[in-house]
Figure 1 (cartoon, rainbow, N blue to C red):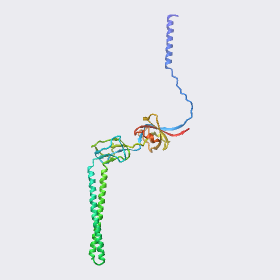
Figure 2 (figure 1 turned 135 degrees about the vertical axis):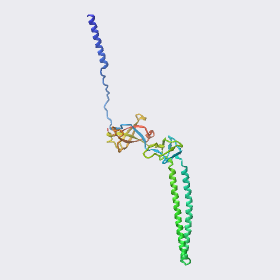
Figure 3 (figure 1 turned 30 degrees about the horizontal axis):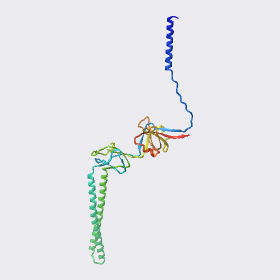
Figure 4 (figure 1 turned 90 degrees about the vertical axis):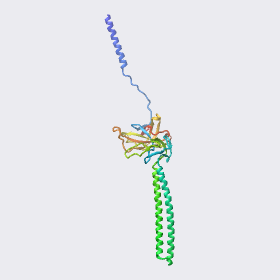
Length: 309
């Protein structure tokens, strides 16, 4: 074999080896197949939320005083637990307290005047009765009887007017008390103060009509939470109150919390035109799970429409 033929053979071998290597490196990988034994179990028909839901408190209120003014007392702090009726905030109200005190004194004066007027009316009434008896015995004239009766009737009218003035003063006191209460903000239910938007000596004003402002105190009820999840409108047909559900929260990993559908909203949310949803509220079944909840947790829910063993 000539040197030229040997070189040509070697080149052919190298080309064949390169082609084989390229084929080996680029060949399709075999598909991995998992094998499992067929078993019997529960088959469920379920629907799940399309976007993350939220854990919400059963009661939550953004509170602000009914009138504007300067904050004079702020006895609570963020994170503090309060009972219903606890004072959360009080505006400067010394003028209203003084007005209420004046109303109370006016009631005392009017009551004293009413007592005097009514006592005078009783005396006038007795005097008129005495003159009437004397008139029957021809010991008093018609003129004396008329004067006695007129005086008794006038005294009775003064008594009624005095008592009416007492009732008027009491109503004015109630109005002053109601005006004073408008400067005080109290907790409508037991809960925790989540946020305070205000400081001592700051001036707060109620929200104008059509303009939403931050509440001065954000109060969240504790011990009662539920989950609200958006369900796609295409999946909502079979969802109804009373269906069982499984709730998962990012804060607790793969832990599943049993729940029950409480309410299905009567309207569709169209915030995203191509993904219209219906809000579904789900209650936690176990009371002990509520102690671990916090308002605002993100949550997912799987609603069980039906199952077959």
